[in-house]
Image (cartoon, rainbow, N blue to C red; front, side, top):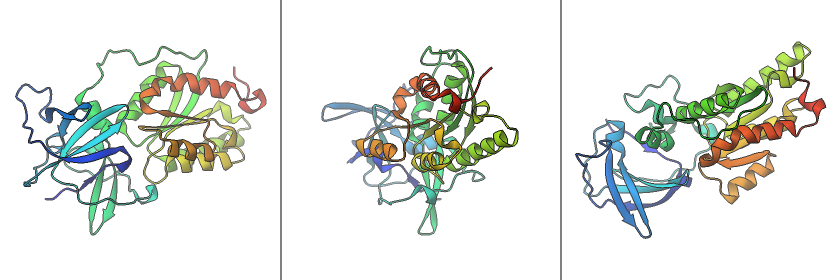
Length: 290
């Protein structure tokens, strides 16, 4: 069976010929092939087929996809790079109900092309699996809010959802966590409807929205645009984050009125930023807290 995988091209620096690395018996993970030099860089190389536990396609020349995200440069060994597709996030199918035999946590979506599905890989999940945080390691950042805050979090990566759940929970946040922008918008509207039906301020149910930018069905920019255009939800602070915040992405975030945009390596600052944004709103908008 031939597997087709894709990655976000915004995270790709270049594609180079494989230098012919072989797995090392002493490697911390079977898929770790060692380090290679690339101009002024020394980067680790991960064999994707080994990590995904799928048969490797025999080729005369393998390639290494050199990626840069979350302030790290990493190489991923692949059997080949075929083509680049321009895909809107509305075309990406969430993997719910689709159960590949391996690597399910690393599959964030599916795209149908030429009669087959391309499985989109969550590279952050792969790196997190290779270098997991110790179970008892404190959550990055020592900020703890003086009271409980209510946050809605949207991310298609199970790894990032878990990380944010721990980080926000440790900072005294009650979180509702969903898988994509469409689920986040539906949830926010449902909470607003519940608040209105019960005659209570929205802040008793939801005070801040925290969202990844790149997600299936609805991305973070579209989610923010819809929230800010809503007469009830429009005053909610929205924090957007991504593996890479380029000037183009920052401009898009500003155009949809996102209140803050940060890169994933700085996500430990999210609880503090969220509290500052909520408290910056006039009291009549934020509601009364007991």
